[in-house]
Image 1 (cartoon, rainbow, N blue to C red):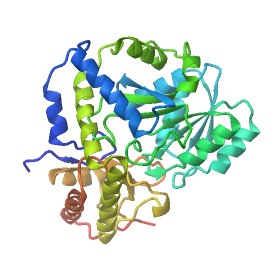
Image 2 (cartoon, rainbow, N blue to C red; image 1 turned 90 degrees about the vertical axis):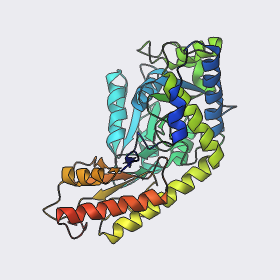
Image 3 (cartoon, rainbow, N blue to C red; image 1 turned 180 degrees about the vertical axis):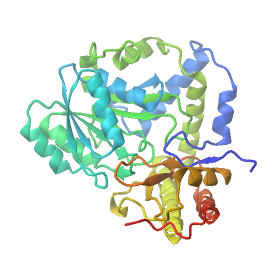
Image 4 (cartoon, rainbow, N blue to C red; image 1 turned 120 degrees about the horizontal axis):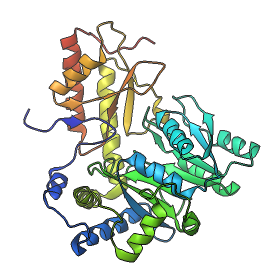
Length: 372
């Protein structure tokens, strides 16, 4: 196969040739030309959430988790008490990193196949007046379930609680409008639905809370307040930026706008999802989530019941045919995940289903029907 393997994962993702080519030039990190790229990119990111009047955006080197940690460290005071509704692995990660920074954390357990219920969050906030902030994972990528951002934001606003949103796998695909949904911080990254390459996160911080964030962070490198102040003053990053990643994301955002922005991207991903689920159903596979709570970002499938199924062999078979799948993230049942995002369309999804069918045949498995 003469093309790159298609990444059916939650990130990194398959990128376009234009995005790849944007990384072929070297940039001086303090040079005016590179500073112009950073400024343009920050402006266009704010445009995507309609946050020009209410928020600033602060980019940060590193994976998306770096920016989640930076957002919690910067936005919450050290004596904050955070509520983390937990319906998956990335919720648990947010709780862990908050605890490691010395923040008090309370979990609200939710079963992995259900979205978080706003009423349950409201009840916990009402029962414990010491809670100051909620951390919400918009799309819990461990399963693919979409959590109700607008509902959680409304109840946090009504009760005067801060809200930090991990929108890592939803930003630029699912609708997020800062004019309608109030959040103190919202975190996303370059290598997800904007279809850039990994290596840079960014955090939208509400202007009304920004000044109060000074001195919260336990870390020099992850202090988003300091990063923002320095960028506003100089146009530069405080420390060496991932120049090639920034240039690639700038180009990826150009293509995002050309495609028609968030509505067009969601439409393509939704068609990818429908093509995938329909094709996999014909092979006997069953998604873990009910369609009503499934975001068209990544789909968790039950593993086949056939005793000959082995994920490593299954993965290697799909890889040999040009497709990279993703292991499951659940502890109670055996699953695997297939992403619907990246610079791909329904044709690639049909080819992926064909690759899965051929792999099953090679393994001697007649059907993907799970043991339910």
